[in-house]
Image 1 (tube, rainbow, N blue to C red):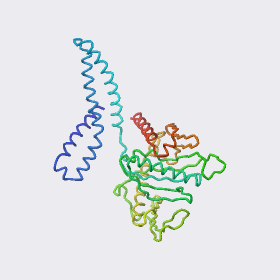
Image 2: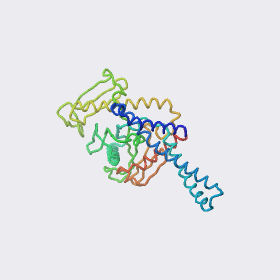
Image 3: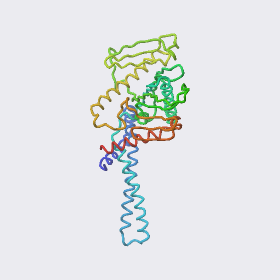
Image 4: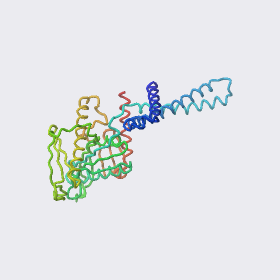
Length: 355
Protein backbone atom coordinates (compact mmCIF):
# COMPACT_ATOMS: atom_id res chain seq x y z
CA UNK A 1 0.00 0.00 0.00
CA UNK A 2 2.78 2.44 0.92
CA UNK A 3 4.52 1.94 -2.43
CA UNK A 4 1.29 2.75 -4.28
CA UNK A 5 0.75 5.84 -2.11
CA UNK A 6 4.31 6.97 -2.82
CA UNK A 7 3.66 6.73 -6.57
CA UNK A 8 0.46 8.76 -6.21
CA UNK A 9 2.30 11.43 -4.21
CA UNK A 10 4.98 11.70 -6.90
CA UNK A 11 2.34 11.95 -9.63
CA UNK A 12 0.56 14.71 -7.70
CA UNK A 13 3.82 16.68 -7.42
CA UNK A 14 4.43 16.28 -11.15
CA UNK A 15 0.91 17.43 -11.98
CA UNK A 16 1.33 20.48 -9.74
CA UNK A 17 4.49 21.42 -11.65
CA UNK A 18 2.89 20.80 -15.06
CA UNK A 19 -0.13 22.97 -14.25
CA UNK A 20 2.20 25.88 -13.58
CA UNK A 21 3.89 25.67 -16.99
CA UNK A 22 2.83 28.32 -19.58
CA UNK A 23 2.65 25.85 -22.52
CA UNK A 24 0.25 23.62 -20.57
CA UNK A 25 -1.93 26.58 -19.58
CA UNK A 26 -2.20 27.59 -23.25
CA UNK A 27 -3.40 24.11 -24.25
CA UNK A 28 -6.87 24.29 -22.69
CA UNK A 29 -7.79 20.66 -23.42
CA UNK A 30 -4.65 19.29 -21.78
CA UNK A 31 -4.94 21.80 -18.94
CA UNK A 32 -8.49 20.58 -18.17
CA UNK A 33 -7.44 16.92 -18.27
CA UNK A 34 -4.47 17.50 -15.96
CA UNK A 35 -6.57 19.68 -13.63
CA UNK A 36 -9.16 16.92 -13.36
CA UNK A 37 -6.50 14.33 -12.51
CA UNK A 38 -4.87 16.73 -10.03
CA UNK A 39 -8.23 17.29 -8.32
CA UNK A 40 -8.90 13.51 -8.13
CA UNK A 41 -5.54 12.90 -6.39
CA UNK A 42 -5.78 15.88 -4.03
CA UNK A 43 -7.65 14.16 -1.18
CA UNK A 44 -5.62 10.95 -1.08
CA UNK A 45 -2.35 12.91 -1.32
CA UNK A 46 -3.37 15.18 1.56
CA UNK A 47 -4.35 12.20 3.76
CA UNK A 48 -1.13 10.35 2.86
CA UNK A 49 1.04 13.34 3.80
CA UNK A 50 -0.80 13.68 7.09
CA UNK A 51 -0.26 9.95 7.65
CA UNK A 52 3.49 10.37 6.98
CA UNK A 53 3.67 13.21 9.50
CA UNK A 54 1.93 11.08 12.15
CA UNK A 55 4.34 8.20 11.46
CA UNK A 56 7.33 10.51 11.94
CA UNK A 57 5.92 11.83 15.22
CA UNK A 58 5.27 8.26 16.36
CA UNK A 59 8.86 7.27 15.65
CA UNK A 60 10.21 10.31 17.53
CA UNK A 61 8.04 9.59 20.58
CA UNK A 62 8.97 5.90 20.58
CA UNK A 63 12.66 6.80 20.59
CA UNK A 64 12.05 9.26 23.43
CA UNK A 65 10.08 6.69 25.45
CA UNK A 66 12.88 4.13 25.10
CA UNK A 67 15.69 6.56 25.94
CA UNK A 68 16.72 5.75 29.54
CA UNK A 69 18.81 8.92 29.75
CA UNK A 70 15.66 11.08 29.53
CA UNK A 71 13.64 12.11 32.58
CA UNK A 72 10.90 9.71 33.66
CA UNK A 73 8.25 12.43 33.31
CA UNK A 74 9.22 13.12 29.67
CA UNK A 75 9.15 9.41 28.87
CA UNK A 76 5.69 9.11 30.46
CA UNK A 77 4.41 11.99 28.32
CA UNK A 78 5.86 10.32 25.23
CA UNK A 79 4.00 7.08 26.05
CA UNK A 80 0.70 8.99 26.35
CA UNK A 81 1.39 10.73 23.04
CA UNK A 82 2.12 7.35 21.41
CA UNK A 83 -1.38 6.09 22.29
CA UNK A 84 -3.01 9.13 20.67
CA UNK A 85 -0.80 8.95 17.59
CA UNK A 86 -1.42 5.21 17.14
CA UNK A 87 -5.19 5.84 17.14
CA UNK A 88 -4.73 8.57 14.51
CA UNK A 89 -2.47 6.30 12.48
CA UNK A 90 -5.05 3.48 12.48
CA UNK A 91 -7.84 5.87 11.43
CA UNK A 92 -5.72 7.29 8.60
CA UNK A 93 -4.70 3.80 7.45
CA UNK A 94 -8.36 2.83 7.14
CA UNK A 95 -9.14 6.08 5.32
CA UNK A 96 -6.29 5.44 2.87
CA UNK A 97 -7.52 1.88 2.25
CA UNK A 98 -10.91 3.31 1.29
CA UNK A 99 -9.36 5.98 -0.92
CA UNK A 100 -7.32 3.32 -2.74
CA UNK A 101 -10.40 1.26 -3.60
CA UNK A 102 -11.18 1.19 -7.34
CA UNK A 103 -13.27 4.20 -8.28
CA UNK A 104 -16.57 3.81 -10.09
CA UNK A 105 -15.88 5.73 -13.33
CA UNK A 106 -19.50 6.91 -13.33
CA UNK A 107 -19.39 8.49 -9.85
CA UNK A 108 -18.69 12.01 -11.13
CA UNK A 109 -21.36 11.90 -13.84
CA UNK A 110 -24.65 13.75 -13.88
CA UNK A 111 -27.73 11.56 -13.56
CA UNK A 112 -31.03 10.69 -15.18
CA UNK A 113 -33.58 9.82 -12.47
CA UNK A 114 -36.74 7.96 -13.49
CA UNK A 115 -39.66 7.33 -11.12
CA UNK A 116 -42.67 5.24 -12.14
CA UNK A 117 -45.83 4.24 -10.30
CA UNK A 118 -46.03 0.50 -9.70
CA UNK A 119 -48.72 -1.65 -8.11
CA UNK A 120 -51.38 0.27 -6.24
CA UNK A 121 -53.21 2.44 -8.79
CA UNK A 122 -53.71 6.10 -7.82
CA UNK A 123 -52.00 5.61 -4.46
CA UNK A 124 -48.87 4.32 -6.22
CA UNK A 125 -48.87 7.42 -8.43
CA UNK A 126 -49.21 9.68 -5.37
CA UNK A 127 -46.31 7.83 -3.74
CA UNK A 128 -44.23 8.35 -6.92
CA UNK A 129 -44.98 12.07 -6.56
CA UNK A 130 -43.87 11.99 -2.90
CA UNK A 131 -40.62 10.23 -3.85
CA UNK A 132 -39.99 12.86 -6.52
CA UNK A 133 -40.49 15.66 -3.98
CA UNK A 134 -38.13 13.88 -1.58
CA UNK A 135 -35.39 13.76 -4.22
CA UNK A 136 -36.03 17.39 -5.23
CA UNK A 137 -35.49 18.52 -1.64
CA UNK A 138 -32.38 16.37 -1.33
CA UNK A 139 -31.03 17.82 -4.60
CA UNK A 140 -31.66 21.34 -3.31
CA UNK A 141 -29.74 20.56 -0.11
CA UNK A 142 -26.79 19.39 -2.24
CA UNK A 143 -27.01 22.50 -4.48
CA UNK A 144 -27.66 20.31 -7.53
CA UNK A 145 -29.57 21.48 -10.61
CA UNK A 146 -32.70 19.56 -11.57
CA UNK A 147 -34.54 19.65 -14.89
CA UNK A 148 -37.77 17.78 -15.69
CA UNK A 149 -37.44 15.93 -19.01
CA UNK A 150 -40.82 14.23 -19.10
CA UNK A 151 -43.81 13.80 -16.80
CA UNK A 152 -47.10 11.95 -16.99
CA UNK A 153 -49.66 13.06 -14.40
CA UNK A 154 -52.82 11.41 -13.11
CA UNK A 155 -56.10 13.29 -12.61
CA UNK A 156 -55.45 13.76 -8.87
CA UNK A 157 -51.85 14.97 -9.22
CA UNK A 158 -49.86 11.75 -8.92
CA UNK A 159 -47.13 10.66 -11.31
CA UNK A 160 -47.49 7.71 -13.62
CA UNK A 161 -43.93 8.55 -14.63
CA UNK A 162 -41.47 11.37 -14.20
CA UNK A 163 -37.97 11.62 -15.70
CA UNK A 164 -35.51 14.29 -14.57
CA UNK A 165 -31.91 15.25 -15.24
CA UNK A 166 -29.83 16.09 -12.14
CA UNK A 167 -26.47 17.81 -12.51
CA UNK A 168 -23.89 18.81 -9.93
CA UNK A 169 -21.01 17.48 -7.85
CA UNK A 170 -20.95 13.70 -7.25
CA UNK A 171 -24.62 13.26 -8.21
CA UNK A 172 -24.39 9.66 -9.40
CA UNK A 173 -22.13 8.59 -6.52
CA UNK A 174 -24.75 9.76 -4.02
CA UNK A 175 -27.85 8.48 -5.83
CA UNK A 176 -26.69 5.25 -7.48
CA UNK A 177 -28.05 2.99 -4.72
CA UNK A 178 -31.57 4.47 -4.96
CA UNK A 179 -32.53 2.27 -7.92
CA UNK A 180 -35.10 -0.46 -7.29
CA UNK A 181 -38.62 -0.95 -5.93
CA UNK A 182 -39.71 1.42 -3.16
CA UNK A 183 -42.71 0.14 -1.20
CA UNK A 184 -45.09 2.30 0.86
CA UNK A 185 -47.47 1.25 3.63
CA UNK A 186 -50.02 3.91 4.61
CA UNK A 187 -53.71 4.85 4.62
CA UNK A 188 -54.45 6.35 1.19
CA UNK A 189 -56.31 9.67 0.95
CA UNK A 190 -58.99 7.85 -1.01
CA UNK A 191 -59.47 5.18 1.71
CA UNK A 192 -62.66 5.74 3.73
CA UNK A 193 -62.29 2.77 6.13
CA UNK A 194 -58.88 3.79 7.49
CA UNK A 195 -57.17 0.63 6.23
CA UNK A 196 -53.44 0.53 5.54
CA UNK A 197 -52.63 -0.23 1.88
CA UNK A 198 -49.35 -1.34 0.33
CA UNK A 199 -48.26 0.27 -2.94
CA UNK A 200 -45.00 0.59 -4.81
CA UNK A 201 -43.00 2.76 -7.19
CA UNK A 202 -39.84 1.96 -9.11
CA UNK A 203 -36.80 4.22 -9.27
CA UNK A 204 -34.07 4.01 -11.92
CA UNK A 205 -30.81 5.95 -11.59
CA UNK A 206 -28.84 6.22 -14.83
CA UNK A 207 -25.46 7.90 -15.37
CA UNK A 208 -25.70 10.59 -18.05
CA UNK A 209 -23.35 9.93 -20.97
CA UNK A 210 -21.83 12.09 -23.69
CA UNK A 211 -22.83 11.84 -27.35
CA UNK A 212 -19.46 10.35 -28.30
CA UNK A 213 -19.70 7.56 -25.69
CA UNK A 214 -22.90 6.03 -27.06
CA UNK A 215 -23.17 6.40 -30.82
CA UNK A 216 -26.69 6.27 -32.23
CA UNK A 217 -27.18 5.15 -35.82
CA UNK A 218 -30.05 7.23 -37.29
CA UNK A 219 -31.18 4.09 -39.16
CA UNK A 220 -31.76 2.40 -35.80
CA UNK A 221 -34.20 5.09 -34.64
CA UNK A 222 -37.89 5.58 -35.33
CA UNK A 223 -38.95 9.09 -34.36
CA UNK A 224 -42.65 9.93 -33.94
CA UNK A 225 -44.08 13.36 -33.10
CA UNK A 226 -47.46 14.11 -31.53
CA UNK A 227 -49.25 16.69 -29.42
CA UNK A 228 -48.38 16.90 -25.73
CA UNK A 229 -51.01 15.70 -23.30
CA UNK A 230 -51.74 16.52 -19.67
CA UNK A 231 -53.73 14.75 -16.92
CA UNK A 232 -56.52 12.61 -18.33
CA UNK A 233 -55.00 12.76 -21.81
CA UNK A 234 -56.19 16.24 -22.78
CA UNK A 235 -54.05 18.16 -25.27
CA UNK A 236 -51.92 20.92 -23.74
CA UNK A 237 -50.31 22.08 -26.99
CA UNK A 238 -51.59 22.99 -30.42
CA UNK A 239 -48.48 21.77 -32.24
CA UNK A 240 -46.82 18.37 -32.59
CA UNK A 241 -44.03 19.18 -30.10
CA UNK A 242 -43.92 15.87 -28.19
CA UNK A 243 -41.38 13.29 -29.38
CA UNK A 244 -41.26 9.51 -29.08
CA UNK A 245 -38.03 7.73 -30.08
CA UNK A 246 -37.91 3.96 -30.53
CA UNK A 247 -34.49 2.29 -30.64
CA UNK A 248 -35.25 -0.57 -33.01
CA UNK A 249 -32.39 -2.98 -32.11
CA UNK A 250 -33.15 -2.92 -28.37
CA UNK A 251 -36.84 -2.03 -28.40
CA UNK A 252 -36.25 0.81 -25.93
CA UNK A 253 -38.81 3.62 -26.19
CA UNK A 254 -38.34 7.16 -24.82
CA UNK A 255 -40.99 9.88 -24.82
CA UNK A 256 -40.39 13.56 -24.01
CA UNK A 257 -43.08 16.22 -24.12
CA UNK A 258 -42.22 18.72 -21.41
CA UNK A 259 -40.76 21.41 -23.70
CA UNK A 260 -42.78 23.48 -26.16
CA UNK A 261 -40.05 23.00 -28.75
CA UNK A 262 -40.00 19.75 -30.72
CA UNK A 263 -36.22 20.05 -31.14
CA UNK A 264 -35.66 20.41 -27.38
CA UNK A 265 -37.89 17.41 -26.69
CA UNK A 266 -35.99 15.38 -29.29
CA UNK A 267 -32.62 16.29 -27.71
CA UNK A 268 -33.93 15.43 -24.22
CA UNK A 269 -35.25 12.08 -25.49
CA UNK A 270 -31.89 11.27 -27.10
CA UNK A 271 -30.15 12.10 -23.80
CA UNK A 272 -32.40 9.66 -21.92
CA UNK A 273 -32.01 7.00 -24.63
CA UNK A 274 -28.20 7.19 -24.44
CA UNK A 275 -28.35 6.83 -20.65
CA UNK A 276 -30.62 3.76 -20.92
CA UNK A 277 -28.42 2.13 -23.57
CA UNK A 278 -25.34 2.80 -21.45
CA UNK A 279 -27.07 1.25 -18.43
CA UNK A 280 -28.04 -1.76 -20.56
CA UNK A 281 -24.38 -2.26 -21.56
CA UNK A 282 -23.33 -2.08 -17.91
CA UNK A 283 -26.12 -4.46 -16.90
CA UNK A 284 -24.97 -7.00 -19.48
CA UNK A 285 -21.43 -6.79 -18.11
CA UNK A 286 -22.69 -7.12 -14.53
CA UNK A 287 -24.86 -10.13 -15.39
CA UNK A 288 -21.79 -11.92 -16.69
CA UNK A 289 -20.22 -11.48 -13.25
CA UNK A 290 -23.44 -12.03 -11.28
CA UNK A 291 -21.92 -14.57 -8.91
CA UNK A 292 -19.35 -12.01 -7.74
CA UNK A 293 -22.03 -9.38 -7.17
CA UNK A 294 -24.59 -11.58 -5.40
CA UNK A 295 -25.78 -9.87 -2.23
CA UNK A 296 -23.97 -6.62 -2.91
CA UNK A 297 -25.77 -3.33 -2.29
CA UNK A 298 -25.24 -2.12 -5.83
CA UNK A 299 -26.68 -5.05 -7.71
CA UNK A 300 -28.62 -2.54 -9.80
CA UNK A 301 -31.64 -4.81 -10.25
CA UNK A 302 -34.68 -2.59 -10.81
CA UNK A 303 -37.01 -5.38 -9.69
CA UNK A 304 -35.26 -5.65 -6.31
CA UNK A 305 -37.41 -4.44 -3.40
CA UNK A 306 -34.96 -2.18 -1.68
CA UNK A 307 -36.91 -0.07 0.79
CA UNK A 308 -40.18 0.17 2.73
CA UNK A 309 -41.74 3.44 3.92
CA UNK A 310 -44.17 2.64 6.75
CA UNK A 311 -46.12 5.82 7.54
CA UNK A 312 -48.24 4.59 10.51
CA UNK A 313 -45.01 3.66 12.34
CA UNK A 314 -42.93 6.55 10.97
CA UNK A 315 -40.42 3.92 9.90
CA UNK A 316 -38.08 3.50 6.94
CA UNK A 317 -36.41 0.14 6.35
CA UNK A 318 -33.69 -0.49 3.77
CA UNK A 319 -33.82 -4.24 3.23
CA UNK A 320 -30.37 -4.53 1.61
CA UNK A 321 -28.46 -3.58 4.74
CA UNK A 322 -31.16 -4.19 7.38
CA UNK A 323 -31.24 -0.48 8.23
CA UNK A 324 -34.29 0.75 10.17
CA UNK A 325 -34.85 4.41 11.01
CA UNK A 326 -37.81 5.94 12.84
CA UNK A 327 -37.48 9.34 11.19
CA UNK A 328 -39.65 8.94 8.11
CA UNK A 329 -41.02 12.49 8.16
CA UNK A 330 -37.51 14.00 8.00
CA UNK A 331 -36.45 11.57 5.25
CA UNK A 332 -39.49 12.44 3.11
CA UNK A 333 -38.46 16.09 3.52
CA UNK A 334 -35.21 15.23 1.73
CA UNK A 335 -32.93 14.41 4.66
CA UNK A 336 -31.45 11.35 2.95
CA UNK A 337 -27.81 11.65 4.04
CA UNK A 338 -28.15 9.13 6.91
CA UNK A 339 -29.55 6.49 4.55
CA UNK A 340 -27.14 7.18 1.69
CA UNK A 341 -24.07 7.30 3.96
CA UNK A 342 -25.02 3.94 5.51
CA UNK A 343 -25.35 2.38 2.04
CA UNK A 344 -21.99 3.80 0.92
CA UNK A 345 -20.26 2.59 4.10
CA UNK A 346 -21.69 -0.90 3.61
CA UNK A 347 -20.62 -0.92 -0.04
CA UNK A 348 -17.08 0.17 0.85
CA UNK A 349 -16.86 -2.57 3.49
CA UNK A 350 -17.86 -5.13 0.84
CA UNK A 351 -15.21 -3.84 -1.54
CA UNK A 352 -12.54 -4.01 1.18
CA UNK A 353 -13.59 -7.57 2.00
CA UNK A 354 -13.31 -8.54 -1.67
CA UNK A 355 -9.96 -6.81 -2.24
